[in-house]
Image (cartoon, rainbow, N blue to C red):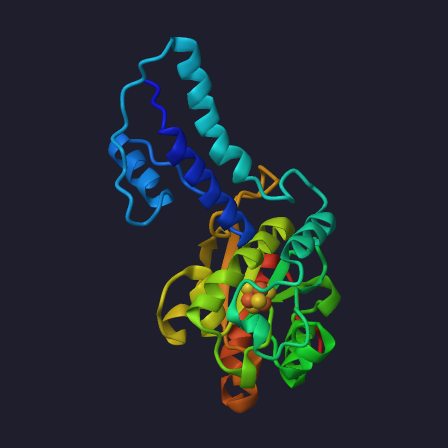
Length: 289
Ligand code: SF4
């Protein structure tokens, strides 16, 4: 039996979803049972408001169908991301960058960033690297992994038999945390929907998370690097649908952040094992010495 929400609640819900869209969050899940729908409606209204019970539809069959369609559309239309339907990954990335704009969504925008560091590389890359956040060199140049850690990452990529231009590189947060501190949870949660959209646009075969912050944010799990490394995870960008129905997510591997490897070069052998696992997955041959 079709049901409708109170028009006021529906309007509050639509306003809330618009607010999330402005934050870069586009995908939502619609709960099906009457009790759950009521809970969702309550959440969309003022925090202290009490959800009105959903009343059985009492209008004509035709208007009931129309109202049900309006409710569907609240989710379907507002949940559509601007790049949805754009099959060219380069164009989709451009749209995501434009949507990000001169972002002030999290506190990092007012903590000394020079510029937003969006991401760089091949929009159709099979391999994508995701780090934690920009450092001083990256903030200065507007490109991820360009300092000493970036040079080491370049060498790691070269050792895999490919070039930096063939992969795509991005970070969980796009603005430099002051003093290179670890980004706060709120900052990661606010910024990472844009990273998820980048991954869904690029549709790589493998994502390599560089370091614990990237791994924990991408996988939404907390574990030590020893527990996270050494295996593949099935990965789908959270809350995203790719434009390509044939792309059903990718593999994700975790390895050490190059900055950590600069501090503890003894771990380079372990990182190389992780990259060899990725190379086998992608059919890559190591560069001859
Ligand atoms: S880190 Fe991300 S969410 Fe925060 S201000 Fe920069 S671009 Fe916006």
